[in-house]
Length: 256
Length: 256
Image (cartoon, rainbow over all chains, first blue to last red):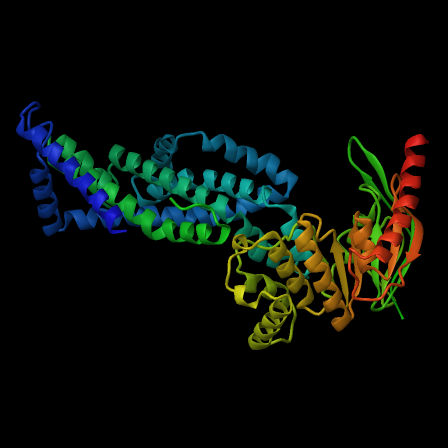
């Protein structure tokens, strides 16, 4: 464990050091490549005057609400398409098609329908999440060994009990990968939307990044990118890692 | 007392490319506490018959009754043990045994726990009760499956080639276990196998099936003392006789 920490920290310290040396060598103008220190200074200042926290909160809230809604809609629809031919031929095909559409393509439509509001942002995030979740759920349920449901039925499990106690847990490995993919899509679509358009009801990380570019403040751009990466890592470690640990423990798949 | 009654039971399977006559006019009576083995080559409908008794499938024609009541659906009085253990990987050993118990009304959590532990003790796996399924060997998995099937106290135990995938040594141990448990708890057991020796070792009666369509050909009473040893000469004599008859049917089928 200590060795792993050591390797990881050495790697990242080395990365920052290389960056620092590249700035010192003055190959590129400091306007294009700011030093790690100036990025750090920006982050400290933005944290002190509150803009960074504010923007982070706005973005994370949009993301969590939209993602939650996406799961709330996508999971039942995926169960539906996996169990009925008619829904597979309708919703299933729709999901398959729309999953291939980059969710940023929804942004113009969302702006026309909802204006420059939270609703537009949520719409884009939900559209980014819901289709891949439907497909992952559908696929997960279809690949469950039929013997599980037979065994459960023979013990007297029926209807809703079978769904919640057998089908969903049995499909968990697929559900998790669907949720992770949905999360990545949600993140990407929201950032694209925030960089593209100013939303009057809240100033998110994407806007902060956008204004950094407008003002030629590369320290701000890189600082915000850094925050986005950290949020992604934190969510992965807090939201998905516990489920993954559970999967590895129970199913006995190898741990990396 | 007659526990299970099957009269003139027939079953067909239709798929787009195939029309299979799985069972043809099967009539069978099984007494309470009797251990009956259904033997025959694959495709003779013995597993289908077991599923019909379990209530997992319906007969197209004929009468299927337990305790004078028609069988329409699965019930906790007739539990199935499958060839693959069909244990749920998302639950621990204990969780698997508790699954069926939780579907029974009117038991307290403490009673369920106590019952599950009792049956795990009975199959010799109590100290593995917090283990994950993937940590068990094939034989241990089938022992857990046996405990899971016994725990809800079914009056009929339906076993579908439960030891088919195990090595010979483990199988022999389980023959001992199953005879011991049967003599203590006096369940009615219907045991499906294609292993004639296994059938002679376990059954009071051996029912011989032939395929295409699946029908009962002959019945053999096995009046040997218990517990029986699968390697005994007496047992082998019965097995040889049944095997000879079985070969006759298979050869006449190939010739005809």
